[in-house]
Length: 105
Image 1 (cartoon, rainbow, N blue to C red):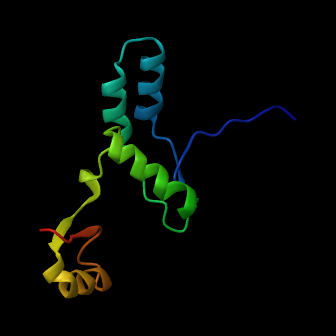
Image 2: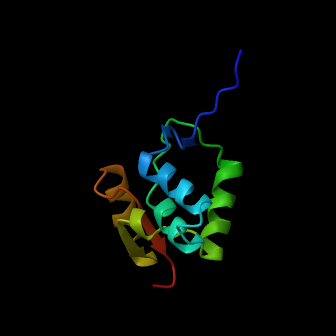
Image 3: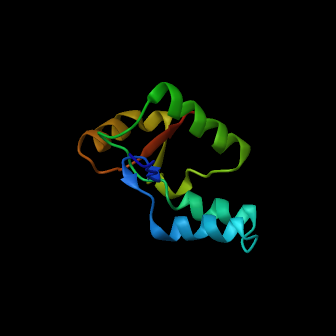
């Protein structure tokens, strides 16, 4: 049987624009910074998908800390610690897709 390769991001196949960006990067037509910008648009939800929390969360945290990835596009709201009850209610009612609590805010 011939080898098969599937480009995979989360639980969905890699979008065409991302595959094109990798090809342009390989031909040196796209900078590493611009490739990173395109990649940051391609982080797709993996709900009920291919997530391994012990592997993926630390990896994403390292990428965010290094500046290679930004979580800004997926954060829908930030809360101070004094707003934790509202954050929990909004999470339960699905009013926030991805709200985060910032204790020092």
